[in-house]
Image 1 (tube, helix red, strand yellow):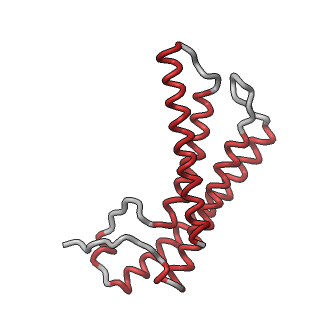
Image 2 (tube, rainbow, N blue to C red; image 1 turned 90 degrees about the horizontal axis):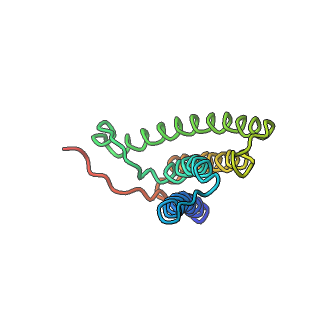
Length: 164
């Protein structure tokens, strides 16, 4: 299971690299050669959307993103676990609904035959990649929920000091 989790994080990191490379090459070509890459802006925009959904997947399992929770920080470990389970269940519900609605957007974009301006690339594959990232987020949140409830010792959470 940890390999699956790590592979999701590597895929998210790959998309970060794609977005950064697209931006770097576009700026470099425009600055030094006065050449604009066709559809670089649209591709960058769509890849940023893909990156956001895969980033949600990568951060949703680890729980190491920035959080501020004074109640949790001052609770006893038993209650911290209850809060974590409740929060993860809420997150699972929200991201599941988001995944369902995003699938409708993928189908709608596919059937609308929307393409980019310059290269006439179909837009739906970008939406599909985003949806797959969202599905990955649901799977990772479900794994996190399962582990929090039944195997909390398998959670590799960073130690957080309680508020003073």
